[in-house]
Length: 131
Image (cartoon, rainbow, N blue to C red):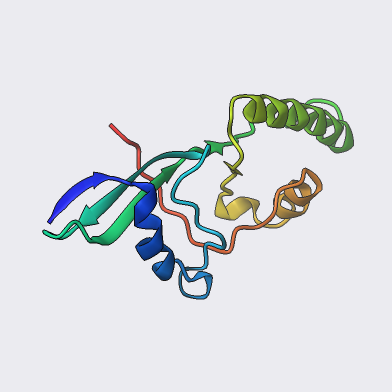
């Protein structure tokens, strides 16, 4: 076994394993503008046996003065701020953004995030700080 970079000819084999009903990711692209790198584990005959993809994405985090103005005006300001962040991220080549919520924020914030164009993610999330 050895690890190498993904090659386009690997797609014929790897596509057989990308069943959305099994992994729940929807369309899983192993190459393209959002993909930073895909590594493939191959056997001694160079047959792909596994692949791991790293995709570009950003984490969106809000910090706001809770005493400033009214809740409605803070939310209006947040909408403007979000539009600018979305445009900048898009310009920089990012197409996926995540916003994680603490357990204490699960009542009103999901509704607000939907208003900002975000949708709930159905998958549990794990994080790695790459060193």
